[in-house]
Image 1 (cartoon, rainbow, N blue to C red):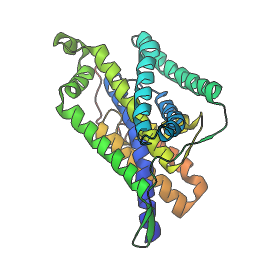
Image 2: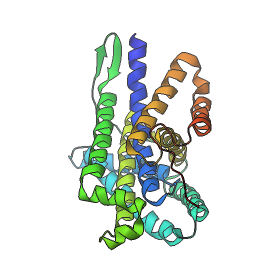
Image 3: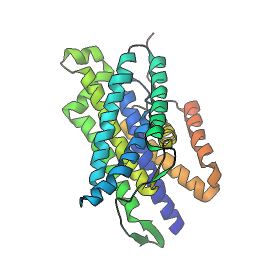
Length: 295
C-alpha cells in the first residue's frame, strides 16, 4: 500500500509537469491550429534561468522563489520573440511551413543553449527545502506535494481565466472566426502574442516542477519533455484545456506505474504506444470532438 500511494503521488507530480507543458501546445493549437514543437525548449530556458538566478537570489539575501518569477518573465519574452520573428511571417504560408519553422526553432534553441551554457548537465539548486512526511507507511516529499498543488492550481486558474475573462473570451473567439473577431474589435495578433506569452510562462513553472523533482538541466531536456507533453495533449484532446490536464496526469501515472510494477525500461515505449492507440481509436482525444470539415 505504501508503494502504491507513493507511486500515485509521484505519477501525479510527473503528470502535472506534462500537463503544464501540454497546455502550451493546446493554447497555441486552439488559436492558430499550429503545433509549436519548440515549446518544450522553453522548459530548458526556464531551467537554465533557475540554475543561474537561484544562487543570485540567495547571495543577495532574497527568497529563492523569486527566481521563478524571473524565469517566467524570460520564458514569456522569448516565447513572444519566437512568435513575432519566426512564426508570424509564415503564418499564412500553410501548416507545413509553420511545422518546419517550429522544428527549426527547436533545433536552434537547443544548439544556442549548447553554445551559451555548454553540453555538460548543470545541477539546479533547490528552491524548496521541505521535509518528508509519512502517510500510511509511505514517505512522501512535501516539495512534490507542493509542486503538484501549484500545478493543479495554475491549470484550474487558466481554465477559469479562458472561460470567464474578457481576454479569455477573445482567445476562444479568434479560432472560431478571425474575420468576425477582427470586426468586433479583437486584435488577432495581440491575442496570438498573448497566448504565446502565457504558454511560455507556464513552461517556466513546469521547469520549476521538473527541477524540484530532478535537480538538473541539460540542453536537450526540453525536446523529450515536449514530446511526451504532446502525447498528453493528443490523448486529452489537443485544443481543449481540460483535456491537456487529464492527458498529462494519465501519461504521468502510466509512466510511474510501468516503472514500478512492470519494467523500468518499458515506460517510454508504452508512452509512445499510447499515442499510436489514441490516433487509431479516437484521434480527437478523450475530450476532443470530431468536427467535419466542409470542402
